[in-house]
Amino acid sequence: MPLPPLESIPPSVVSLDDYEPLARERVGDPVWAYLSGGAGDELTLRENRAAFERLTLLPRIFQDLSQANTRLNLFGRDYAHPVFIAPTAFHGMFHPGGELATVLGASAMETCMTVSTQAGTAIEDIARDATVAPWFQLYIQPDRGFTSDLVKRVEAAGCAALVVTADAPLHGLRNREQRAAFRVPPGLEPVNLRGMEPVPPADKVFGSHLLAKAPTWKDLDWLRFLTSLPIVLKGVLDSGDALEAMQHGVSGIIVSNHGGRTLDTVPAAIEVLPSISTVVQGRMPILLDGGIRRGTDVLKSLALGASAVMVGRPILHGLAAAGATGVAHVLKILRTELEIAMALTGRATLAGIDRSVLFTPPAS
Ligand code: FNR
Ligand code: LAC
Image 1 (cartoon, protein in one colour):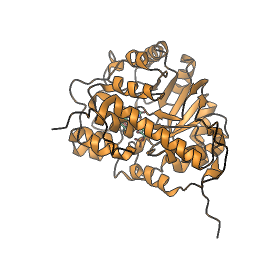
Image 2 (cartoon, rainbow, N blue to C red):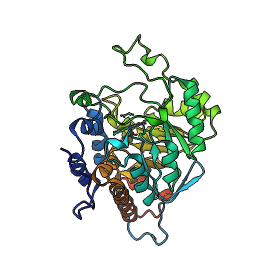
Image 3 (tube, helix red, strand yellow):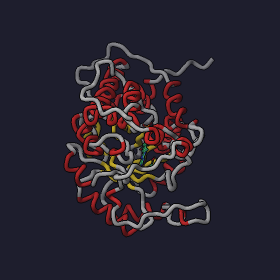
Image 4 (cartoon, helix red, strand yellow):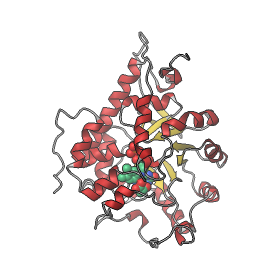
């Protein structure tokens, strides 16, 4: 039997990784497989971490840090720091408080939460409890009329951006989930999709209904004229796609391989960031997710061209371990680690972070 959530955080919990075993004891096996697993052999899942571990930092000394801060502006809004919560499905699987516990923890740390299309809580209720206007992650639904109504709801709820996920027109082949026979537990449903015709399962991919209404660039154009919200396209790994997204008028992109959950054997997000940042040339903000576990990972991402990062699984670990308190503590740890990493590399502001933060071995 899974343990109940912790009432308080043991003082020995000092890093994001410390939360993983605490979460493991509080989540059943199939849900754990869903939370932790990736696609196929999970090579990309592992690479998301390995790629950060290969990068090294170069400290700088005696810089003036008296005015140091982590503030930024994205799509016309001010944020206290560049760590955002990535969209993840059904927080009620991990803690009885669900998304409302997450948004409480996020609010305590002045953090923007991205709410999944597959949230188990109405977007209006989450937005009402948020001190930082949330972003909403949209899977464009086969029923475009329904999708349009949902976007109007998201706008009315006061969300600050629409994150359109492009890299998962179908569920990745997640063997770990399959072996554990994962199903969304009874009692949880994607309430924001209520009233929509459910998509029936199919026994084949090509030639079935599964891809018949998968979104294309034309749907992005449709969406852009439908909403005044900034559109942030999630799941870009190719520089050509980044350019095309910009030509289609998106406000920003998220370089992401969906936490290694869609197609296996693709590169780590941080590996492709430099080439994408080179073609984008600062013309729109780039965010990154996948494998962020340390403040130094945030710094490395900013050094290679990201304006901000998103964090997925560690938020769910904090949530499963200790509800809102766990989420807040995970964010607090990351923010503190980022500030220490900036101070020790002599960067007083996010604008001061560039590639020279990274150590480049001399060519031999
Ligand atoms: C996700 N992710 C995701 N992405 C999305 O656009 N919509 C979604 O509903 C979900 N759901 C989801 C559930 C779970 C359990 C996980 C772990 C991930 C992907 C997520 O937004 C993000 O891209 C990755 O989680 C980032 O990698 P890390 O931080 O988990 O390594
Ligand atoms: C996932 C889907 C919900 O990654 O995006 O599980």
